[in-house]
Image 1 (cartoon, one colour):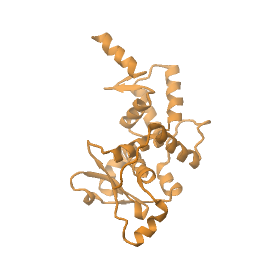
Image 2 (cartoon, one colour):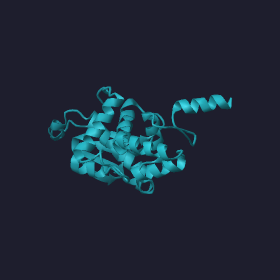
Image 3 (tube, one colour):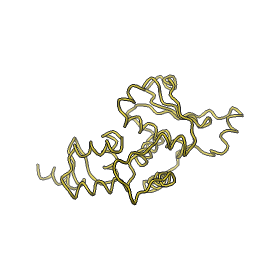
Image 4 (cartoon, rainbow, N blue to C red):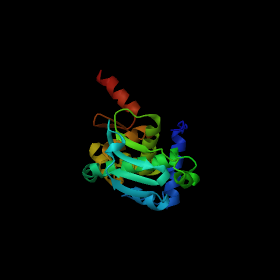
Amino acid sequence: MSRVPYISAEEMEDIALNILTDYGFDFENMVLPMATPIEEIIEFHFELDFAWEPIDHFDLSGIVMAAILPGQKRIIMNESRKELFEEKIGTMNFTMAHELGHWVLHVNDKDNLQTSLNLNKSKEVFYCRSHSTRPPVEQQADMFAGAILMPKPALEKFVGKLKATRNIDMGSLYTLAGFFKVSISALCVRLNRLELLYVHKGQVYNSKEEYDGQIAFEF
């Protein structure tokens, strides 16, 4: 695998927003629910093949969730995890978006991939594992997935409305996660990263500073 290029947080947001805008998202007139049709974007916008196959053999040391074969322009979801994905739609959507992130961020010279495949030189496979440690290339794909499934303008708008009408609790966030069709954990990570809210151990704060002040007050 080639060296992982540095991508700033601002650049990652721009990459995701450009894809969504090209696909037809109208952030000026957006309304809930606003779930990103990630499978459609994969198949119709990027013209990548999409399939379900058993792929545990890609890595016997961990649980393989999905993979992308760049030379074949193909994303594969692990069929042996299909029951989990169907039960947790947010996990499935994030995994799909993660694999698309590898295509967008990490696959170089896309125009020549078919030539490389015909010459039997394209061997690289990106596969996503359920694992506690995340190398930089996987962290970037995770950040891309968060940005494309939970666009910054949408979160800013809807969190702003929630703040204006009532105190936000975990119930509000579960509802928001349902609108975006993501897991609650993915939503909380995204909100923390964008500094729109600070979620810690099931408690929701308007900011990290508010949380720090609350902790100091308790002591």
